[in-house]
Length: 150
Image 1 (cartoon, rainbow, N blue to C red):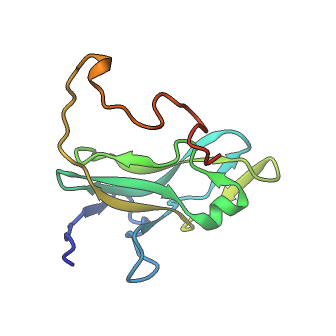
Image 2 (spheres, one colour; image 1 turned 90 degrees about the vertical axis):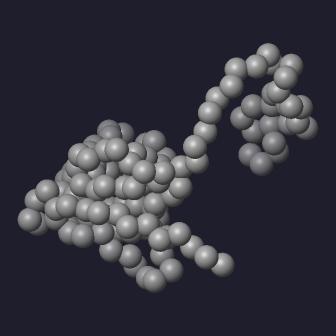
């Protein structure tokens, strides 16, 4: 099975920033580290700096995902997965929300805070049609929880 090779260029915007690293050769995501100590207040969303900028090739995106070890403590990403578009050249920021015990959680400088996975973005188009032209499915218009998985 062949795999695409994607070269993502990165720049340190701060000399103390850390290059993305992988925890193992089979890890899907690359770990991102906090540039500075950051306190996240309970129920509040806070942008955590990485000190990095990236150039993701056209046709690809970066998906910023929370680390399971922080999620288990109560540090979540309020948007689930953050998307870094291929034309974005600003600093990578990780949006985090504290929902765990205590009024705040402090991220230490250099702590691994998230991981970035590179994924393909298909070329898509949207074509407007009448509702009746959409194919029927067993689920139909069933909304949240209608598939029986919740």
